[in-house]
Image (cartoon, rainbow, N blue to C red):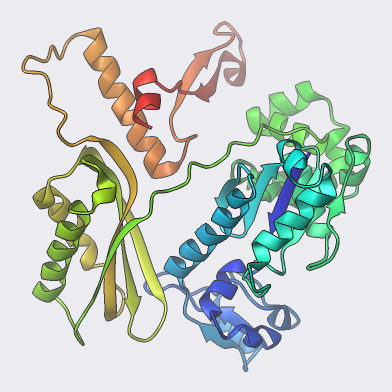
Amino acid sequence: MVICVLLARFALIAALGDRRALLAEPVALAPEAGGPQMVGEVSAAAEAFGLHSGMRLGEALARCPGLRLVPPDPDGVRSLWSELLDRLEGIGAAVESDRAGQAFFEAGGLTGIHGGNIEGVLASTRRALAGRDGSGAGRGARIGVAPARFSAYAAALKARPRRAAEMVSAGAVRAFLAPLPVRLLRSRAELAALPETLERLGIRTLGELAALPAPAMAERFGHPGLLALDLARGRDTPIEPRRPAEPVVERLALPEAASGPQLEHALVLLIARLLARPERRGRSLRSIALSARFVEGGTWRTAVTLRQASADPDRLRIVLTPKLSELPAPAESIAVEVEAFGPPAREQARLIDERGSAESRRERIGEAVRQARQAAGSDAALRVLAIDPESRLPERRAVLAPFPAEPAEERRR
């Protein structure tokens, strides 16, 4: 069985911090500085006025003149969610999480250490989320239990905060999903656009979708259609637990109204401190994040994936300095954090590199795949696999398949 932990309005809760009492009032996340003028997550009181995430700021204020806007805090969201995931992993859970406020893990291997049944695992999960004093950010989580990831997510949506988990048995999962709307498929990034098309075709529930024949779905929608059909029938892909990050971060407070050369000097100092950290253990850096806390509240964060992993301070400075010009407001502090490490920095290249050899070309392709996956996720690099080259239908001639990980890549991880 899969357990889904769902925390609604997590980004808004993280931005409010100690002011969570404001959730009883119409509150929304303000638009990101320099971004589209659309509100982020909204409180339940704001939803009563018809507000929702992604609504234009002018329309939101017209519907609710008393709306309070809270500066977004992406840095706070990241740190708070990482803390909650660490707590779940503290009870032995191998957690998968693609977005803040939503986590999945298998319950089967945990029953033996938490009372011998699923109820013991759920009780330990709630204690971990609530923290030692019972007032943690995860105390209001909704929990769903079902045979697969998608059905567990649907069960968590029906569960009530701080109440018993919604449980769906393997034999009842298809009947449970049948009356639910197809818009639930938007929870999967690769199916975000599919529900709108299905609704235009008159398919409004998962039960109606599950009744469609697989060949017709494959011919009309390809792989996304088959995935949606599996989800509607209660099947899903296996859980892929995350690799816990190694938090290596350096932060520096800035003098008032710091800009230009002052910011650049601060960045040089941060890079030097980062490379001197013992946690680096001589490794190069593959991905780095630059973040800032604003004087007026809120945070900003941007990540950079290096074309080639490096520990050269001059190269890191050249890569990160242009990002300082993207700061949308005066900052009271800036920070540099390692998101992913590369191979040891002392590793030397070959004296003679046969660029034309098949092995060399494969190594360069493997490095490009690693860079793409670090920047855009594990499914960023795909390959074309021929299925029926003689078919008259282009969709049947070839499909996209995951590019296989190289053994060298696995060793570096």
